[in-house]
Each structure stands twice: as C-alpha cells, then as structure tokens.
Image (cartoon, rainbow over all chains, first blue to last red; front, side):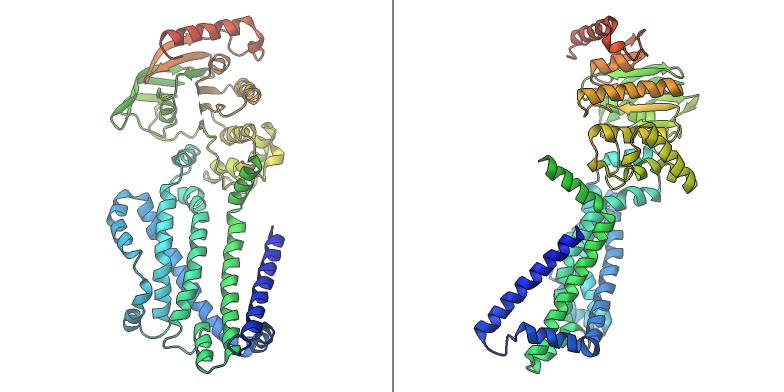
Length: 256
Length: 244
C-alpha cells in the first residue's frame, strides 16, 4: 500500500516538474527559472539558509494545529454529547464559521503582539472551527447501538470515550485536518509577511522583493515540501489508527 | 432465575412494552416471536439493564435489575462489534474494562476464539469477515465473560439459511454444555421452535400466548415430524391473531 503511494508521489512530482520546465521554456524569462537550477539551489541552501526558516514555519503550524485539535475536539465533544451545550454554542459557531478569520490578523497583532503568538492564534482560529464542527457532527452520527453494545460488556464512564467515541470519530477528524492543513499553510504564508524575519513565507516574499527569482522558487519548493510532509504525517496516522476504514471500503468495493 | 412482573415501557409516549409477566428457571430457555415493532427488542434491552422500565420489576436471581448485570451476556441485532477493533480486541474488551491481567486476557480470549472455531481470524477486522464469522465473534465476546444468562436480539436474522442453522446448533450446544439460560428474540418460526423451551408470542407490546415446547433440546429436531407439527401449530396461532 505504502509502496504504491510512494510511486504515486514520484509520478506526481515528475509530472509537475515537467510542466514547470515547459513553462520555463515557453516564457524564457528569469521569472520562471529552470527546475534544475532551483533544485540545485534548494540543496545548496537547505542547511545554511532554509532549515531555520522551515523550522520556524513548522513550529508555528504544529503549535497552532495541536492547540486547535485539543481545544476543538474538546468543544466538539461537549456540543456533540450534550444537547444543551450544543444549543448554547451552535448558533455562535454557525455565525463565526463563515467569517474570513484571516482579516483579524491586524487585530491579533495588536492584541497578542507582533511575534509568534498572533500568527499561531490566527492559524489556530482558522483550523479550530472545522475541527469543532466535524467532531460535533461525527459524535452525533455514531450509531447508538455501539453505545448499547459497549455498555452491555461493562464499558462505562471515560472508557466509553476511549473505546467508542474517539476511535469512531478519528477518521473524520483526520479528514478535516487534511482539508484545513492546506488552508493553514496558505494562512501561514500570509502571516509570515508581517513583522518577522524567519519563516518560509518571509523568505519567499523577501526573495521576490530582492528580485531573486531562483531563491523565490526555492522557497516555493520548500513550502510545498513542508505541506507534503504534513500531509504524509496525517496519512501515516490514518494508516496506523484508522486501518479499519480502509479494510471496510475495500470489502465493499469487492462486493460490488 | 428471571422473574418479570408487570413490565411497562414507553418510548416517546407510545407504549412499547405493556404489562409483561413471565419467569424462566435456571438453565431454561425462552424464545420470543413477533412481528417487527412489537417491542421484543425493547424487552431484551430492558432485561439487559440497558433501558430502565417505567413500571414493573425485573428480578434476576432475586436482584432487581436497573443497570448492567455482570453475568448477563447480550448479543445485539447487528452483532454489536466495533469496526475499529480487531476480532481479538472486540472479544477482549469486556475483560479489559474489568481490569484483568494482560496474560489472563490473552488466554481467555484465545480459548473463546478456539471454542468458536475462529482462532485464525484474531487479527481481522469485522468488515473482513462473513456474517456467520461475525456472529461467532459476537458469541465469543459474550461467552468470554462467563455469563449465566444470554440475551439475544434477532442474532441470526442477517445470515443465510445454512449458516443460521449452524449457529442455532451452536447455541444449543453451548446451552447444554454450560447449563446456560437464554432468551432469544426472533421473527422466524423455525428458530423459535428449535431454540425455545418455552415460546412466547408477542403482539403490540404484550405476550398473547405462551407455549411449552416438549421437544426442545434435540439437535436432530428439524428432521422430525413433531417439529413440523409445532411449527404449524404456532403458524396457525399467529395467523389467527393477524400476525402473519
């Protein structure tokens, strides 16, 4: 399974690089440098220049996503399990959900300072709504027979969470994460344009201002690899903890 | 063993179980037959302590049931297995939450799987198994807790005819070996006659007939004249009550 997905990644990479190379030939300007030069530049600058930027971006995104997951799942569980809490919170969530939270970056910078906090909070606020809504809906959709079944063999209290609720909602939460991580990298890129000298977003925009398009593309390559790596971590989690979903889907396909 | 008196239960203002009285002695069995929606599943949930009665009392071995009882095994309609747990973990769950030692759990689960003839499936997920195999896992999950009473809610309704008979034989065998009392809810006449020492006919929340089955316990019963006679008798009775 994993072997095949690696082959797919390789195929995708070759395809994209081919398009990139064709565009480089077609435009024949320094705005789109050749993939070859960019890749060489990437490896030359990886250790001395890129790693600190990538590390800073990774720190911001991982902190934000972890906080969003912990707080979001907690709120989602509360609203999903308890009808009264749901009635209290849901209208608020419903109104806040479609608001473009990215517009609040200036406010967050005023409130939480120009440093990492405002950037982390912005990403967290964007990711958290998806997690809350997914958790709440998944909990509500758990087949009641599972709760009866668990109770009938003596599962009670917090063990219901451990044996029934968490495993049942985990696949949907990972799917929600996959969707929001793409958004959160975009937000990270935006947030890193302000009041910082570290972060892959800063590196890309700075190279652009300096008219160094090879560096700019190197930064784009780095942020793409960052996104890909985060996706693969989610895939690994899915493979490890939600293998049963895949097994179930496979059986269904075979029956059809 | 079980004594049920004046049992009432309503669901959203609709009476689902109404004034039910019966008793089962230790080591005996009762089959409850009735159409869909007659309240027979609710009755199983009440006996299991998963639901609380509005009125009336359920006593098992003299103790009033208003919660889960440790020695009652329950097999729900769709097997009640968790798709995210392997066969082994599904069977082990009840032992784990009782804080048994890990080695003891291993031994007990292996033993139960072996008894059900599904040892080689221990690493599979329920989605990878056939209906009959899943049913065996569900039975193993109940038996591993060493129950003295087994409650089954249409356990074999999703199985094909041959697997269904195989499972019925298995229940009869377990019953004989362990002197296990059980209650089975079904909408299948053959099943009620093969597995019920007593057979209750249920309609709109009430027991309308209680039949004694003198032929119960014979593994070859299905091949005998008496079996067809009793099936026919039950069928006529149910047809007169507009249940068929």
